[in-house]
Image (cartoon, rainbow, N blue to C red; front, side, top):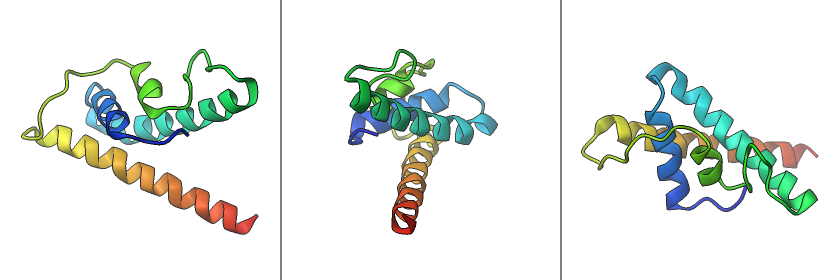
Length: 102
């Protein structure tokens, strides 16, 4: 996956807001995985993947319906932002463990 910036987090959180609460974690994991696959595709073929984009989390998330961005007084939005950050940390931890085993 490409380097993750503030806009990536916000866009992913907006995508999570557009689905019911019970679907958010699965969608978040899917967005991260799709961004990672798209980045690998981009590095191999030199072009963006038609469905998943260029490897940025923002582009992977923007392929989904996006809720209007609320401010941080919205608790649900804060939970979505936190979920994106937590899932990114989990994804990175898993990658480090896999690399250490190789």
